[in-house]
Image 1 (cartoon, rainbow, N blue to C red):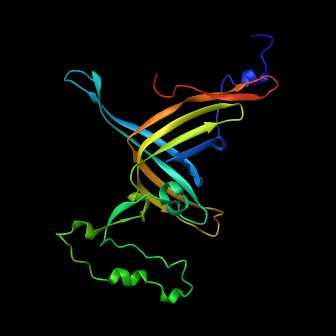
Image 2: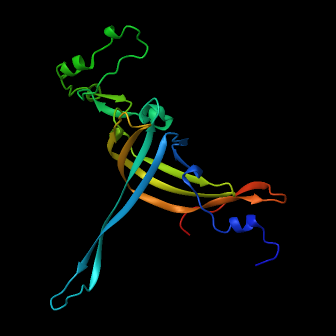
Image 3: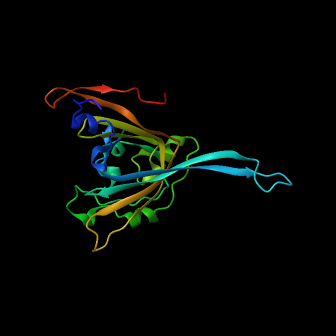
Length: 226
């Protein structure tokens, strides 16, 4: 080890990141209410046997599945309305789908607002085969499982000037659950998802250390499989 090796040089040899160093980005917008995200990769592998042998000769490889969980914190609005990455998304909904109609926030007299129960009790509309578009409406998602597939870019940067990134591609949310009680300090929304593929953690680059304990420009690394 060189005699002029500093503590800063040693700290930059092996870098690590905590949850405080990490941001998750969707469509260029950080998810400010995200508390946690996890994933698990599973693949079907089956042994191949032949008569007269106890042990398998080989293992056949089958399909791979990637799934995980997303946990968000409910502040004053649901993630669909709170996060700008999702609040601007639109999907095509059937006019006959039943969705609760919340009271208008701009209406002072709540008794004059539309009643969700009355909307549900309305008879179904006639399906117009001559004008297919009139049977469907472009609208904001009402449930998270209606969101179109989206990518999550996870970026980590620590105080020592190291940065890394990983990516989750094609997330489809399956389930959502939440709950609240008098013993809860915060309200969490928990979701499960499946996705198409994952780019594991890789170095993103680092800030160039300068004399006097300062830092220069950020120097990116080539991100992606070598």
